[in-house]
Amino acid sequence: MVEKNGNRSPITSQTSQASQAKKYSFLKKQDRWENLYFYQKSDVLYQLTYRFAQRFLQRGDRTVDQMVQAARSGKQNIVEGLADGVTSSEMEIKLMNVARASIKELREDYTDYLASRGLAVWSDGHPRYDTMLAFCREHNHVDDYKPWLEKWSDEEMANTAHTLCHMVDRMMTTYIKQLEERFVSQGGVKERMTAARLGYRTDQRDQLRSLQEENAALRAEVARLQEIISNLSSPSNLANPSIPTIHFSQAIHSSQARKSK
Image (tube, rainbow, N blue to C red):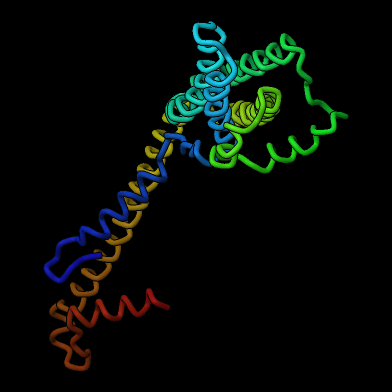
């Protein structure tokens, strides 16, 4: 877009630059961790575990720090992995596996707690298993669990956390598999950078070739018009009144009319 004063519109220029930058972008789009169910449930696990430790574990017990840190590691490594994944698929997959390992460690801690205190593990066939499973599947946010954190018994909290750990582990396993498939099909950031650079250079060569062809066509047209003018301006044509005089502008108009046909 060119303004009346002959300058290019800055709006059009910025739009063109943005479009070109998007075309050659090599950074991977980051998933918003807040929207991922396994992150939401891992956040619930951290809050639930923190309160569980305060209510049911003795101060000074090493298990308190281990469980809280495992829950925090699961949540935080998801965030860090997704952030690092913009520039490093390898680091993203690595941190996602660290997060998954922390969640598995936490699940084992809850299993040990139930076993060491002779409490029931709610599995298929237990009278409360289906209700708990449905609740954990349908609720992903901390606010859904907060009303119960001061009411549930240690058996109820431990079984709920144990089930959430299992769900997060399964969802993360699926997500990591998707990351691996994406890496195989799209490559890492270095490969995407190379592809973007090669694509840009190819487009530049194509544009240059197109401009050269257009320039050659224009030169040929100018030469043809000059020949027409030269013929019309020759002494023999000027001396012959029967031949009408054609001005340069008429010749150009005639040429353009032929091209439009």
